[in-house]
Image (cartoon, rainbow, N blue to C red; front, side):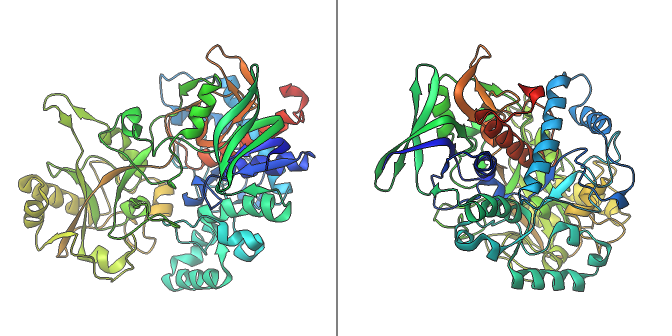
Length: 546
């Protein structure tokens, strides 16, 4: 049945739901359209970090309040030397992020500061020891009938908020296990599940915003230059939705598209985000005249397809990013020469090396690559679907020495023997002279073993048998290209003029505020531009932005 609404959100993830909350509370008739049978989107698969500088949410006990000047100083460091930035646009985003986050918190989205969680590059200039990274934790029961429709994360174990996980008392393994058990019994949604769940609860459960599942946008409606609605393809055929105040594109990027690797300039790319980010909504916007521009630096990592794993709710094979596994002791990553090529403990540090092309030998310098671990790792740590101490499958290459492991895996044996010896010599001292693994406080906290000394990210590979897993390059749904938007989330044409009635947020919109990577910025951008778009569409912008 055709419908008439004030505001249409294409995509039932974080951005679409956030815009729905804002538009609803401004008095609008809102509709969310989701192409799959689950809500929560890419954010549900994420770690759930939200980064907002000078957010005013930190308790007084954390010391002097954060400032915009300090936040901008830190972002200058992240941006790096010699890279231009539009400071006015960046400040406008930072102010809007503060405004949006405070508003959503007042609207029932429980953003809380993660204590003991520093900025990624702390102690860089302008960085903080805690206060800028936020999270949401909500009881599953509070989502009501939408609990079973929340997209489950295959990557993060839910049940313990990071604020508890990073506390001093959680250094005790028995305490961490108790927290996990209690959180599981309560069905406490944390990490990406908590973040997405908080917006599902706010939009769909508490406000009752209608959401059409299994409805994919196939065309935008226009009247001259103005976007006036969309055609949705549903189980019972096409549905025409006319949107009086605007349409928001919040359906993610293009990582699952056939040309994703070419667009990101990598030898191959497997998308680890939910199998609904193939760029179709971006094409709809382009047909309406939208400009695609290059924004953020590339961001991807490495992963492995463990036998039998599929994305939740279907049969699409899942390639699991190793993420937190890479920073655990008794492991490393090597290329075909048996050499390490970066600080494995923070996966973002490997991006440049993964994209490096060896012009002399006419091949990618660090692809293929392998994740290596010894039996101490297997006994101590989870790897993908396998709990500590589980037997690993026969599909893993294994051998009783580094040389034989290299021979079996197709790695240069002499190179690997030298690399393991050098790595082990430093690891027993808690040092990595070559790449500085385990030196960033954030990485030590988020990706290491807090019970391992002297460095939570470093341990030698010296306990046979040894294991090798071939790695794939995996995306997180965060492409470098996206729709060009302004500070109000309006989609722009190539000439810089806004397309009336068309908005975008999240991974559909190019990140123009910053080069470099800040943990939690993507999630913060998503709800911030969703807030801005709904505010503009309903003419509820603050006077300074009109």
